[in-house]
Length: 443
Image 1 (cartoon, rainbow, N blue to C red):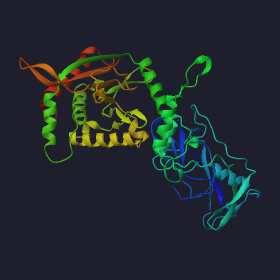
Image 2 (spheres, one colour; image 1 turned 90 degrees about the horizontal axis):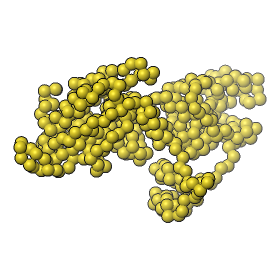
Image 3 (tube, rainbow, N blue to C red; image 1 turned 120 degrees about the vertical axis):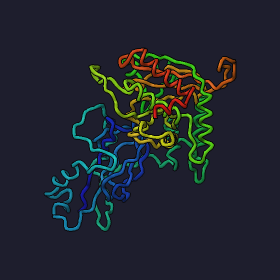
Image 4 (cartoon, helix red, strand yellow; image 1 turned 90 degrees about the vertical axis):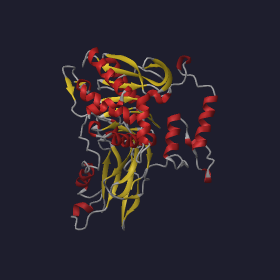
């Protein structure tokens, strides 16, 4: 007889304690293969598909779309056919003397998945177990290969919503739209993105429902927005940050970019040139590539520059990280920045690509603004901000001229250095922007 195995939400890494169900990719009674993705979940870092290490028939699912499942809590149970030559204990049914052994087998920690760790039993942290299955007394016969097994029956839920695109589901969830209440305009009633957008527009046009004591409606703070709020609040609370800024003539830097892009090969972005300047500047001022220890008793100096940069994705503003940026050429920096930017736009960034930064480059000029005083990306000690590059009147070689000017701002943790170091770093960056040939002395 088949053995029912319980697959639990694995440790997704980077201290995450839970994940929200975005969509189920399998149904109860469906036959799945080993390492087949069974659910898409959203963490505070990214949206990922979770593969199951067991092959067989899905007998139960835990958690509804939009609910949070804790690391180590059950995701699915799978009826697994016994291997050839298995002993009598593998064929034991629920009422046999070997049932305790089967139950023990079903409760064991599954083998690690590719890219994931295994949660330790009793792991701490804030968590909430959700989505308990139907009573074990309710059962139905499903098939594993040529063998019939008895599996729990999950009570019928709402009718299946005709939506194919996970992006449409995510848009509806983010905007609070009930897909079951929509009539799709696509083939066979398929719900399209335009249907969700019309529902959102209708909601905006209607007066917002009043909350308690006449308050407006409240949008839950969860997922990525909640993680960002917690991290920035901690940064603002713990780090004594200061900001200095300077205007820089970027005319020569833009001319260099045009020269580089006139030759065959991948195009070089302004962000790639700024990233190269940052790595050179951090080699000159290594105390800024650091972080203060959790207890505040010391400063950790990082030998590698893991360069984070702000990127706008479908889940909001995220900070992907270019690993070992100091070892990459300008072209390699450009390629990696481009890859991570595209992954951010499509929502395909992994948790590992969103963590571990040691310094952040924030190009807020893409939003059409000149300056900013950003909050540091805890626990990093410094962030360089770059405003838009725009034509302005400028005194050049003693004469008034129209030049391409940008404002550079530098926010730093005052615990790791004083103003002299921060000013020296910013001035060096500005000099490299104005005279990019200076970089040759540092390479």
